[in-house]
Amino acid sequence: GIERGVPTMPVSLEAFSQFTPTYMQQYHLIPYRLDRTAGILHAYVSDLDDTTLADRVTRATGLTLHVTYMEPADEAAFWEQYALSTRAQEERAQAVILAQ
Image 1 (tube, rainbow, N blue to C red):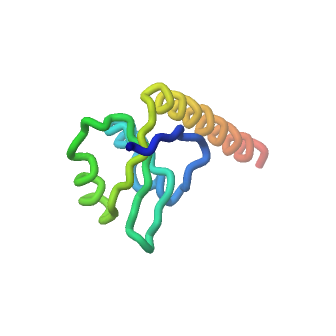
Image 2 (image 1 turned 135 degrees about the horizontal axis):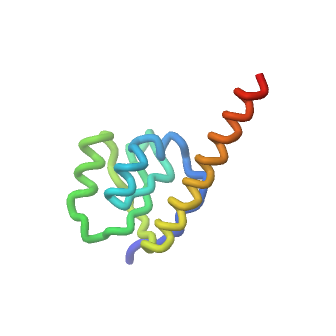
Image 3 (image 1 turned 120 degrees about the vertical axis):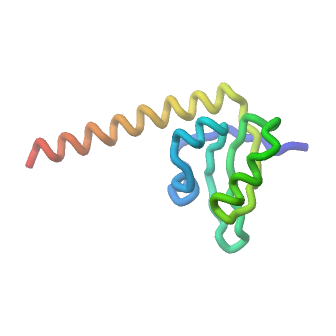
């Protein structure tokens, strides 16, 4: 059967930084672990009908995609959490700048 999971923060920055957030949202992809030794990128994917995703990932990164299915609602919740986390980081950075 298909491996299933729920994406949560934090994910591996090395894996996550393989693509832009816009790209990941467009293709319903959340990379969470990178195994450079084996050449495998582990990622949550919500659109199992996208038959070209694995090829696109391999062309872009040189890595083989290992898919863990996520429900679309879990994907949406992850991006909400990501937005909140990013906003908090920006606010902390701004506070540091203002304090100088």
